[in-house]
Length: 126
Image 1 (cartoon, helix red, strand yellow):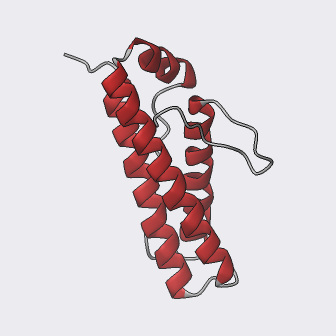
Image 2: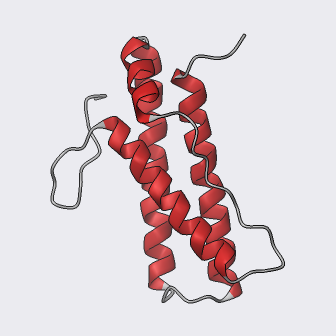
């Protein structure tokens, strides 16, 4: 049940840390869209903490329960991100207020998921 992996469009599996990189790319694209045409609003900031090596070593050292939680959060974030981007594309990808608001909301949701993933497996400073 917990052995499924995120797959690319061509169906090949990708590594979990590549999934986080994909989330960061989505968040960056949404930041570019949401912040590019709204000068009066501060652009949302994509989170770029936790290097891939630190995340991979944290995942490797995590218990099976933590790994399952990590995978569940990653799958959820991927589903939310891809669904949101598809819906935005269906709107024509325009720069109307609704699309920009959706980009900001989706970006903050992905940013929150990235923070949750990092908090789950990265060591905390004492």
